[in-house]
Image (cartoon, rainbow over all chains, first blue to last red; front, side, top):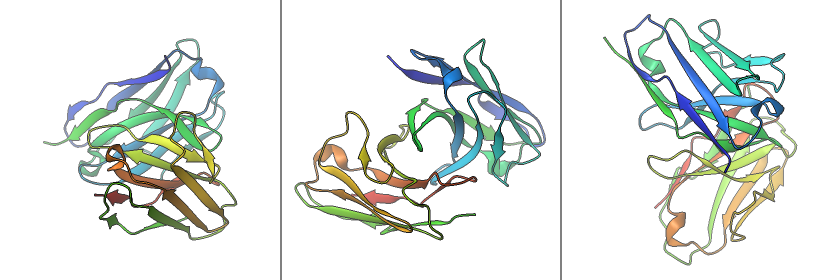
Amino acid sequence: QVYLVESGGGVVQPGRSLRLSCAASGFTLSEHGVKWVRQAPGKGLEWVAAISYDGRNKYYADSVKGRFTISRDNSRNTVDLQMNSLRGDDTAVYYCAKGSMGGLDVWGQGTTVIVSS
Amino acid sequence: DIQMTQSPSSVSASVGDRVTITCRASQGIRSWLAWYQQKPGRAPELLIYGASTLQNGVPSRFSGSGSGTDFTLTISSLQPEDFATYYCQQANSFPLTFGGGTKVE
C-alpha cells in the first residue's frame, strides 16, 4: 500500500520554530517531487513549498519565503519542512503530497500546527 | 502568479443530478490542471490531472475538459458519496495555486 505520513505538528508560540516530517511507505519517495500544502481552519487549500526529486530545486509560496525551508533525505525516504518565525496565520493542517503528471496523487493524513501564545 | 477562479462556490444538488464546476485561470496554463475532491476531516484526493485524464480508481461519472484558461469538472450522475468540496489546481508554473473550492451539498 502506498501512503505518506506526516509528523511533527503541535502547538507553538508565535516566533518559535517547528519541523515537520513526511515519510513514505510502499514506494520510493526519492523518485518523486514532493509538495507541502496547508489548509487553515475552515479555509481552502494553499500550496506552501515544493522540492524536486533530487532536492536541487526548491520553491516557496511568498507567504513563507525566508521563514520555511524544505529539504529531503533520500536515504531515509523523507521530506522535511523547517518552519521558523511562526505566525498566527501559519495555523493550519499541513499535508505532504507526491507529485505526478501535474497532479498530487498521494497525500498524507495531515499534521496540525497551531501557533498561539 | 496565476489566479484560479472556481464557480460556483457552492451548489445544491440531488442524487442523480448532473453537476458542472468551472475553473478559470488568469492566464493560459495549457492542460496543466488538476481536480481534487475533499471530504470533511480528510485529505484531498486526486480525481483528474492533465485537465481530462482520470486518476486510477476514480469512477467514470467524473470527467474533466478544457485547456488554456477555461476548465470544467462534470459529475454525470451525482452519487451520495460525491457530496464534498472540489478544488482545481494549476500545475503550469510555480507558485502552484488552487481555486477557492466548490462545495457540493
